[in-house]
Amino acid sequence: MDKRDYYEVLGVSREAAPEEIKKSFRKLARQYHPDVNKEPDAEAKFKEVKEAYDVLSDEQKRAQYDQFGHIDPNQGPGGFGGGMDFGGFGDIFDMFFGGGGGGRRNPNAPQRGNDLQYAMTIEFKEAVFGKETDITIPRTEDCDTCHGTGAKPGTRPETCSVCKGSGQQEVIQNTAFGRIVNRRVCNHCGGSGQIIRDKCGDCQGTGKVKRSRRIHVKIPAGVDEGAQLRVSGEGEPGSKGGPPGDLYIVIRVKPHEFFERDGDDIYCEVPLTFAQAALGDEIEIPTLTEKVKLKIPAGTQTDTHFRLKGKGVPRLRGYGQGDQHVKVVVVTPRNLSEDQKSLLREFSNASGEHTNEQHESLFDRMKRAFRGD
Image (cartoon, rainbow, N blue to C red; front, side, top):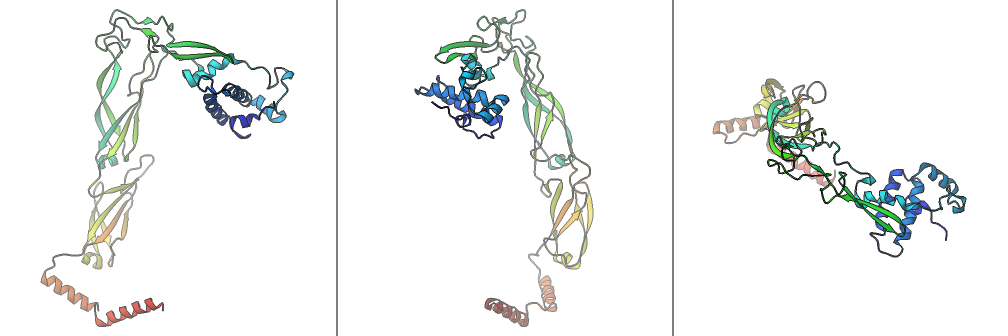
């Protein structure tokens, strides 16, 4: 029976990258592994997938296959169709069914501690200008009584007699297509490689206790909502002499009643009276640090924007500051007195507003618009 194309077997193109080939192999190996798939042809398909991967995952073999295709198995070890060594299947399938990519993890090797996350809520101006403060972090630390061993003072943990300290047990299966070695976590020691006969009374044999730690932190000027600050080495301690993890502080910023922020720029709205907008004026504008004077030209319309350069937020990664953008809103007066109403009527008449001539002119223009003129 002719062999199928190796690329077809793995379901990849001839231009597939090594990562794509490996990903496809892992998926198909899981699908057709005889311990998982009980279909009659699963074992044959599994062998086919394994053979295709052995060739396409090797740069030299893949190049030879791309040039010459399948080689007669009678040509010997150099051919792709020769005998298959199933003795190494255990290492391959450990990463699918027994863990760890085929390698053994030493339970006594140094391991890095876990990272911690802390959410900090600060005021709007604290985010702008930065602050220093102390925070209290609950975290797991080594027990002072047993120094992290978990054993009662004066005693020591014993090496597990089942896994000999490796933390793993090997289960060997001889199948029709080869020898499979599965490595699992040792159920006697829980994968630690050690047995504690006399447990420490303070930590109950875990070697860890919960404590609160006070840490001084500096919030840099210019941080914004959602910023994440890393404090190196302030996470949970490592085990077996491993380094500690890090502390990540996630910033939450309270809104301000007057200012709004977009990146390094500040936005605000300032009310103007009708007289200020019409006649012009010089008004005071609050900024993040002080009050500044802003000149309002005569005839300013509502929603007009002004920019105060350099009055925004200090740039977190760079020099200088953003700008402050001021939008003016002309406020219509309410609850006018009779004198104020009389003055506005005089202004209206002096401006020629609301006369019959203007109304007729407006209606004429609307009629022409409807006619399409």
